[in-house]
Length: 148
Image (cartoon, rainbow, N blue to C red; front, top):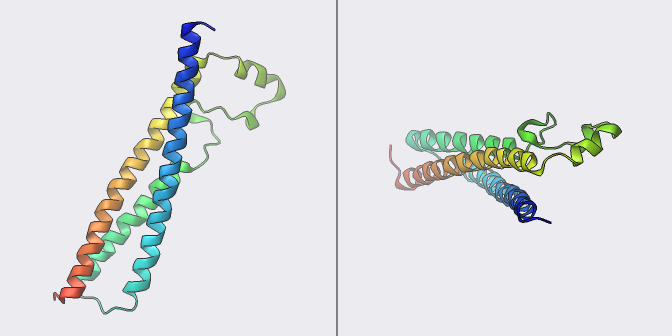
């Protein structure tokens, strides 16, 4: 195996590992957002809330729901094959051999585009989660302080 082939194989493995890491982070954040939404709903329905707390909390919850949507979009299976992701289940038997023998560099480029798309959704979801969480904390402080 030449040095170039070895470098391509290493790059291919790195891109696949990055996709796996991003999917793992996405799953953990989605579970966290779901727990925060459920916990907030449980607490908020039993506590008398002030109008400012309702506004801040409502915006915070909306941001968390938007974050959950981005996270779900990030892990949604792409059956259309965009971003160069090979979908072996959609190929006919005579199409599999040429697809397997295609240039590894093209596969790396396609998987890299997929990784960037997933990472971008994850980054935006983290930003929304942090902002939504801050607004929920503000709503809790407004409720605890009794601001009118």
